[in-house]
Length: 155
Length: 155
DNA sequence: ATTGAGGTTCAAGCTACTTGAAGGTTTACG
DNA sequence: CGTAAACCTTCAAGTAGCTTGAACCTCAAT
Image (cartoon, rainbow over all chains, first blue to last red; front, side, top):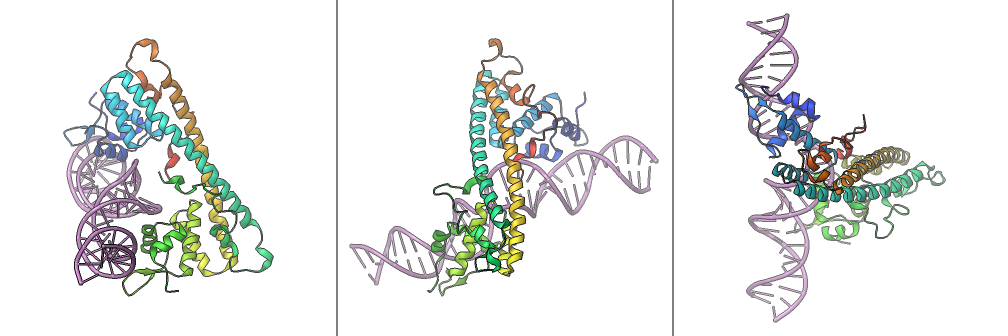
């Protein structure tokens, strides 16, 4: 009952100790208690909070979102929490679906590029364009007219 | 024929001027010529090189890959270029497909979380767990046994 | 006494840029 | 000719979410 050291908390939550320290420094969790030796000590409450955070991270939520949810959770207003979480999750779901759509489009492009690169060089002659046209985009790789392929991973 | 200024090159390649400067500082392209006023000046060759880079970026290639491809392209050994590009593109394609698979799994999780959050709180009573269990993962959100959902966007 | 496995802090590095400050240049207009 | 807008320059710092490293302390075992 004296409290758990950071490595034990790391084991239970699945988060690396360095990440737990980082979350503290980032204000996601309160500064941990310290033992007489200066080591951080954690109780069950902290482990649960960190598990909650780990769960949110599995949903790919950003730290800003996580911060909001942690605050809502602590505030203990149940409806409030549920409403907040629904909004955050819904937004994240929409973003994820958009990401998937973009990546599918991208994988099509890559597939086409690969197909073209698998063909022997045109007529054995190494022209000026060469394989580079696959990327320069003389033909297939231009965005299909207003396709905005660019911001795929920008988030 | 005096040369294009950076904003004109930006317009032709679709890359922001700031990005072009950044590519120069990152060693992706050679330092541009300068006019008597200190402005950068570009010729057709540079525009083509930058278009090539923009094309590679549309394929979501990292700067390390792009650097390699640019070098190969400049080296002018055609077979070599084609082999390099094939390898890079194939790797990228595999990565993209893996990403898609992970995101699909993630969107399933999010969908389940949303479903559960849409249901009214259990029996009207706001228990200790409340909506938080959706993320804490008492039930559905635990990784389906050895699923490694974590490194979804780590790259 | 010393080794090894923990713990601590603080700083820097990672990707691929973007943004901002502080300033010089060029061009168009009145 | 004056000046304001629009361009260009460099350099520094900020972004997300950590990870890694250096330099040091603590504790249990040999």
